Image 1 (cartoon, rainbow, N blue to C red):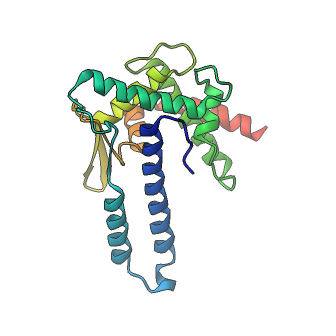
Image 2 (tube, rainbow, N blue to C red):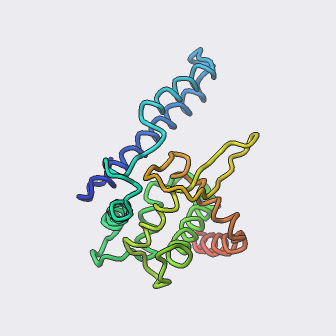
Length: 217
């Protein structure tokens, strides 16, 4: 269910993402049972893309305003940031600690996953927290995340695009800010882009080993 924050543009975005997640799961379940159900992979994928098209592959966060108007654009980004903080802020101090961020990002983790998979999930989320706190437009390296820092994340997602090159997906920052977030851009693709682009695989490995050790205790 969508977390109601009072920031409508953020709530609408989360609803949009959740609809795509439901569509993804439905398609995967059908693919797993296609032989038993007598369904073709082509038919399942066609319906998957039809449903995705109905949901919309892009989310326009401008609420009818002009993305070329700097003030309106920044206001909409701030709303997204405020919605993110409102969702995660357990102690209502207006800032998101690492603990609050991890609790939110990993609240739906599959308890049946291996310890290794869970440790990797924690490492990836921790890395994203670090990037927002230390390596984006409004980063202040304070050890907590503000609405401004989340707004910077969404500004980067706005200009981030993913294209398929052969069998792989390739991400790029386009420098184009149109107030629309692509469903692929809002997924893990941006996180992998950050890891590859900043040569931070060693950091990920260290975080992974730290969480793996903690989970094994």
